[in-house]
Amino acid sequence: MIPLDLHCHSTASDGALSPADLVTRVAGRGGRVLALTDHDCTAGLAEARATAATHGIRFINGAEVSVTWRKRTLHIVGLGIDPDCQVLADGLYSIRHGRIDRAREMAADLVRVGIDDAFAGAMRFCSNPEMIGRTHFARYLVESGKAKDTQQVFKRYLVIAHPGRYKIGKRLMLELVEEFKAAGGEGIEVVSGSHSASEIPQFAHLARSQGLLASSGSDFHAPGEGGRDVGYTLPLPAGCVPV
Ligand code: MN
Ligand code: MN
Ligand code: MN
Image 1 (cartoon, rainbow, N blue to C red):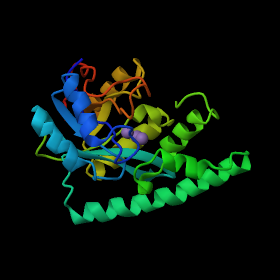
Image 2 (tube, rainbow, N blue to C red; image 1 turned 90 degrees about the horizontal axis):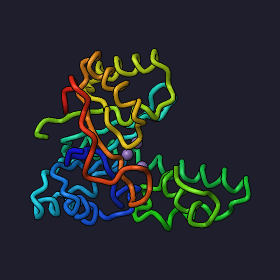
Image 3 (cartoon, helix red, strand yellow; image 1 turned 90 degrees about the vertical axis):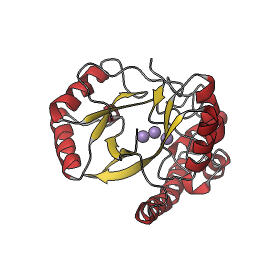
Image 4 (cartoon, rainbow, N blue to C red; image 1 turned 120 degrees about the vertical axis):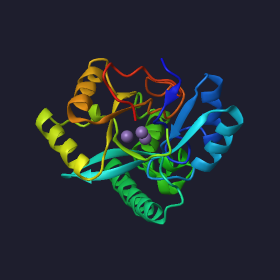
């Protein structure tokens, strides 16, 4: 494992740890390079950066942005972003407002199956109401017993997050990569907490053959939730060019 993690979440979006607690956890585990990539939001970056500085961790500003491509929601990780950029701030603001509408729709669907209080329940797990999302509903459903478990940078990079999670075939994946590159995208997550052992070489091949840079991130949200802890990732397969 290498002490680098370019994809994780804090309470600024749907993570369970505050930005400072998250970075302190990384420091305690010996992490050296960290990007915080909260969903559609840069609110945690300043606190995380300040904490990282006290631990000598190299910190990279990041965000995981929800985008729509051919009626699918995909996630793009931005690394080395400028949180003071007004165009970015405006874009993220409008995405966040879509989240509240989607959350109300999710809550209405749950009412139809007899779960009446999901919106309020999910909000209890959400420290920033603008960031309400599926993960908060999942935590509420688990806590209330209604579900078993929840399933370098001075340059900037845009990276397709966890490609293994999009249930699209090889051909559509190639079309996605082509359009992504044409739109200025440069990288893809090869090592991800969401990827199985067999998906890592598969996406390493895609990165090499398509000339994409390779990124590594845990996609950590909360201690004990999901497979990977924050701060370390598996090494990239041979031939991959790291972001
Ligand atoms: Mn999330
Ligand atoms: Mn994601
Ligand atoms: Mn994520």
